[in-house]
Length: 234
Image (cartoon, rainbow, N blue to C red; front, side, top):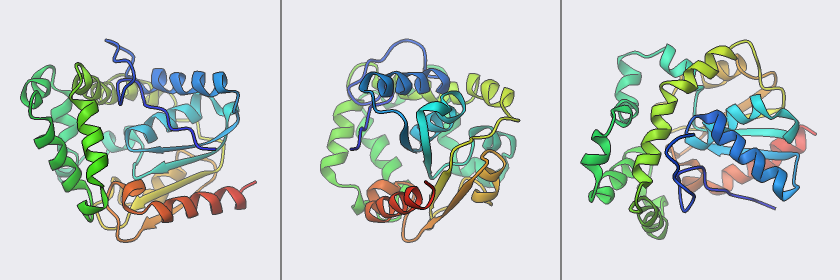
């Protein structure tokens, strides 16, 4: 079985005024898992969801058997190791963190902004189906949706760094799989190396012919990698 919950503020979920730190968002997922009675789980996260998943693994290890992180390096390490190359790649993080301005500039222009982001991050933008883009647009055009997404990034550059800094000596205990797009600039020059500092047992590889949107661009490769990883790490 696969359960794919919307993160707080995304999709059709509620958009509260606060709680976009990854600790709160991980607690949302923990409550959902407990309510469904499906623990322990294999937790798979991509991009912002992978940052929530990393925090989840630190805060709720008893609910996990395996962790899968798609196309991210640890948030703390990215900020700690910023240079000219990385700032060009994650310019939108800093734009999103400015109070009020990104909401004002994207209101009514959600399609322009989101299509730009999807095209810029994909190896082959055609892999992201138009039906999916229309669903993303429907969600992000709802009142408060863009603000909630920007608040996710705002938390990433503030309180999340405090939480991550306090846990620098704490490693993810469960087996961890890290996949990243092989056809784009990665978030770390050594993706496996940076995660080995944060996880007790980690493996992974670059997915060929793939950009940032791994589940959309190479879904078969992702599913096969997860199934093989879980089977080989009982």
